[in-house]
Image (cartoon, rainbow, N blue to C red; front, side, top):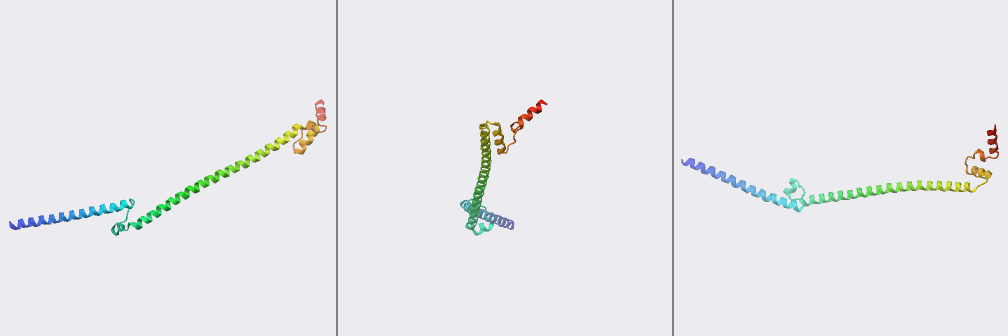
Length: 157
């Protein structure tokens, strides 16, 4: 009987010892996890590798991450500025092309207006034919010398 009781006591002691070691390990891990979480919160919620947690080398990681973040922000700004500059350059080129076309159109209108004014001021048909010829226009048969007579003769025949 005594051996059975001693066996029970030794088993109970072993179980208590194991439970105690489990509780100690659990408390240690809880404190360790809360410590690491505090560090993680202090360092901007970054994800750390096992070695960085083990050796607590969070500063180097933070510096690398911050430098990468600054680089990405700078690249985003540069891309935005390039896009804006490209858009403005396209708009300016389009505006310049439109302005050139309008200048050509206005020049043509001025030339046509000058020709029309010159033609409307000339009343004599002979002079009108000369003016039209000097402008490079096709002179109608009626304005040519003797053109009207030929036309009347053709009608009479």
